[in-house]
Image 1 (cartoon, rainbow, N blue to C red):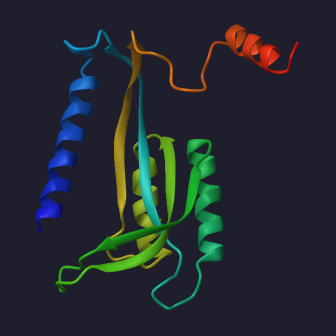
Image 2 (image 1 turned 135 degrees about the vertical axis):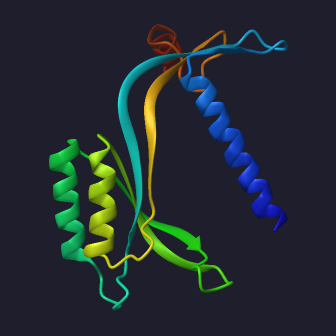
Length: 168
C-alpha cells in the first residue's frame, strides 16, 4: 500500500511538473545556473496502448496486430512497438494483481487515434478494460547552462579526440 501511494505521489508530481512546463514557464535552480525553457511546438498527442500478446481464448493475435498496425500507420503516419512489456492490474471483481505480457504501442497523432485504439482493443483483442492513455505533445524543452551528457561532445572536439587517440 505504501509503495502504491509513493508511486501515485510520484506520478502526480511528474504530471504537475509536465503541466507547469507545458504552460511555458522557465525553471531555474539556485545551486546550478541551468534553466529549462519550454516552447510550444505542436498540438498532437502521444498515444500509449497496451496490446495483449495473448487473447482471452489463449490464441496469439498475430492477424489482429498486423491489421491494427497497418491502420495506425495509415492514420498517424507511423508508430513504435515495444515488445514483451509486463503489465499488472487489479480487475474490479478481484483483490489480487493480475500480470500479463503486452506489447506497448506508441503513436503520435490526432485524438481520433485514441478512439481507434480503444475500439480495436475491445473488438479485435477482446479487452474489457483496454489501456490507452493520450498525452499532449505541446512543448519542447531547451536546456541552457547544463554540461552536455557524456559522449555527446561537439563534432570538432570529438574528431580531435579520435585523431589524438589513433595517433594522428
